[in-house]
Image (cartoon, rainbow, N blue to C red; front, side):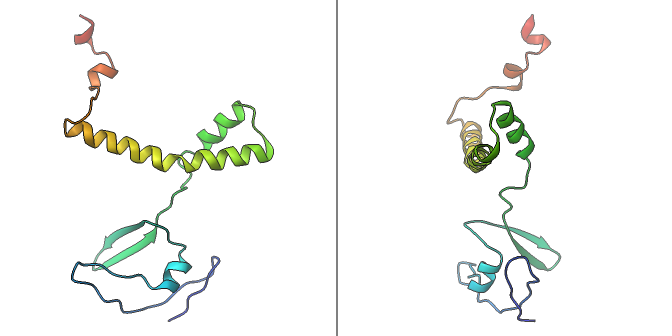
Amino acid sequence: MNQTTYAGKKRSGKKRIKVSEKRQITIPVDFYKALRLEDEVDCQLQGDAIVIRPVQEHSGEFDEQILAELINKGYSGKELLNKFKETRRRIKPAIKSLINEAELATEGKADYLTYEDIFETADNNE
């Protein structure tokens, strides 16, 4: 069961890992490389198991919108591909920034708009 392969082939393996006093673990290097992990992982509790998976950065959620916008701007070929990659890389930092701004607003440390400010309600029009 200690088989670990790369490049999309079957990966399996089992290792015992020590948990530190701070509840931290170290992922074995062969597991780390096989899964192509980066600076974050998704961790999920399933029954009596913890499942750790690579974060899917480019899940395709915005891909169609990005491509449509770039095509409308006249990009094609290699230039389209390069602009697409560049735009997609900026999504995660932009989302993190939005989350940070929202957290500051909830703490009263930043300005914010209410629902009524954004979508004028009947009360605001009177």
